[in-house]
Image (cartoon, rainbow, N blue to C red):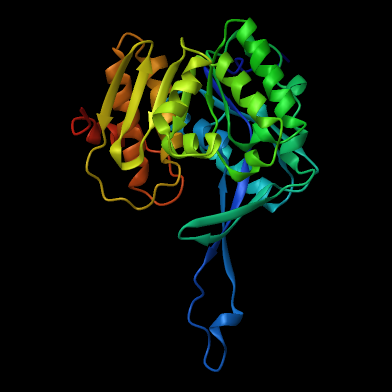
Length: 327
């Protein structure tokens, strides 16, 4: 009897986001307690899968890119939720590594304004091994995205920086989003990593809040000039919240204003914005920079219409694109 034919090989992803996947534990107001009980004794938490790199990978996949998240998660209940959501998003699961380590948690103990801390000593994300990625992937990938707290957590940070350098040497285009968080302020090595990643990147995405957090004041224009001086050739996307975003290329820059939307929350808006820019660059490379920017801003606005880090689809963005205007 002849053996069944082997299935065709799985195509390689065009886009990979490397970094951390984590679980946000978000405090919630307690429900009314049962009669005779004290509401103050009730503490409720909502678990939400997330992480900067993981969010960008899912957002890119939602926009039609063959995408992967390259990182490590645990075998616990939180890791399983990340695994299941990754598979449901259509990510290439060959890039997700499972390890028997504790989960990385972001404990959001106050939501207005957000206050949080991370729990992740020797957690799963730190055990990501680039050498265990599927063989041959780097010969086919077009873009690799780096960022988030993964670049402030050793030994993971050093491994990712080395991976970015190796990919750059191969001619793979890279994107960097520092996505400032307080953990970066306590790592004395992070300023050098910030500069090294900026120097490597073909695209740098940063928010006005990131610039304030990374450089320690609100002199946004001066901080942006410093960042761009490290890599003047990079395309630089600066998100400005409700004021839209600017895109800088050499001596030119463009500004796009967001369309009017009803905001559910802004979680994941920045991740959707950079995923929108990269998907536009990959799928429609002949468009002028201003049109890539409009698509990115519309993607960020579309993400704000849904609660949580829910990546928008192409139809969601197209519905807003005509109302996303250049300033």
